[in-house]
Length: 328
Image (cartoon, rainbow, N blue to C red; front, side):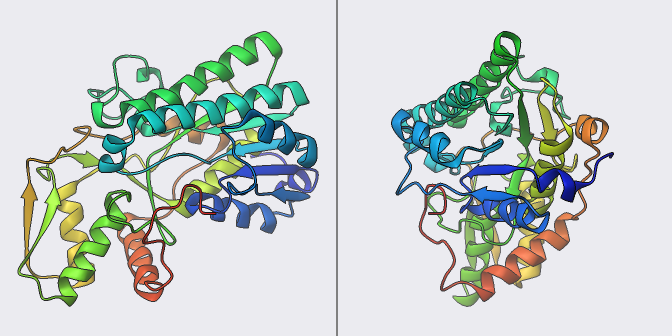
């Protein structure tokens, strides 16, 4: 790609919402390493992005050139089932507020992180960005997915009417060091790592896994995602949504086997088919990211799993075993 990253970032004042969270921590680290002029991380205890007055104050005080919007109400299938109204409202309103007030403030660029949950329940694999509107999302996380997808509509409408430069990125399921390991709210990889470690330590003869094991997912290492976001922020200015991921899928059953093997758990895996699988398959077509801003994922799943497991084992006493909204 053309353009010196350090020269670009040295001119930027950047607000990273959710910058103290899982993905945000790595994005902020990379911004600082790239020589970013200023990085502002609003904390939810001081700046509630659902409240329009707080968002206005954030723009007034931070005066950013660029906003990277990562903050979200997120969780696994169980958390989505228990909080559909909150997940819809808060994710929609946070994004709407930030985009509208950014437009009014003359913001140069807005980077919206969407979600693979926005794709229809039954989508041909690999998921292509043009498939986003071909059906309704999987029911267990539809409120979250629809709220996030509505922000793509807002950005495209604002581009058309106001010339507002907002881009929309769709990462695959993230995992990596520093993830949320609370079993009530975590996503599949940290939940399985914790279950396998605790089952091994307890010498449990079996452990239970939600669903049938037949569903597939694509998993995207968090540090690769942070790299992709910075590349897109610097080099991509288009209206089209862009998938971020590896382009490779794995069944939950095969994933469990990999994690159990790395951890050293040798008991039986029992699948609880009374629990939902969620979307049947997920794997992304990632050619647009490579074509538009030169991104290609670098971390193989096995290596990423090893790093994530090592981190969990080394930080169990301090790991986020209890859910936090944005890491604050």
